Length: 306
Image (tube, rainbow, N blue to C red; front, top):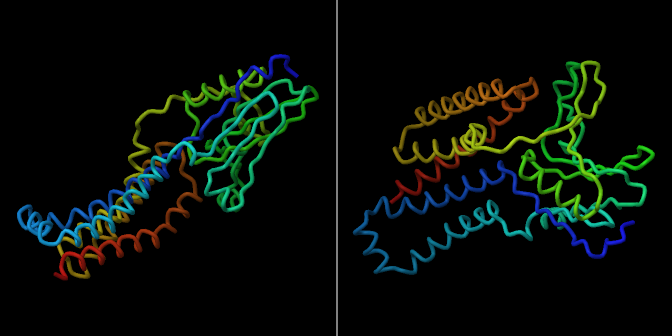
């Protein structure tokens, strides 16, 4: 297709770790690190130094017991490049390779060939055109637009489109879109456009130009981290003060209500709230209660059984 195809290097793009996954992994690492820190904080600096001198094997075992999960979750938060999903683009085709874990679970690689009839390549926002929620199904409302992940579309001269989905829990920002645009253009020699597909008031799907925004530090990241960390922080705090059963339940209910209220206001301000989102959030009661109770009992037993 291209006379200089052999001289053009293959473009490889590593898909970043989703911010939600990284926040969860960092919160888990911080939890195990705090649990290890309880020992020297409880004993004091002098008694801790004496204990390490008298029984170093015990502290090595404790360091291994708590250090192993810390190292594991840090590796999940900041994995090496060969653990990432990646996209490989050349003049012959564009391939998506899932993460090693997904490949072990049986997810295959996917590829679309760059044939001679391909006119242009589109990078489309969202891993699908829409995501149907239970709310839209039962209420008959219009499906919402999916803004997470992206697709690479190859459009032929006859208008036929071949699609390569790249699922991820993050939105593509301006820097990532520029890297994809430049890399795919250089490796294939074809024009690349950034587009998004929107639904009109009549429900028809239309294709418009897309300009990704620059990612910045915002309340969304802190809100996600707070949602994950709240039951663990609350359980540790109540476990340290050794509260009675009624206080444990009351604090847990208050934390869950505050978390729910904060999530509601954030979702309303960011225009992401829906009836399905409210229903889904209520289902987290079980996971919140389980995390909160397990953290409380573990902390209380660890600190007050001595």
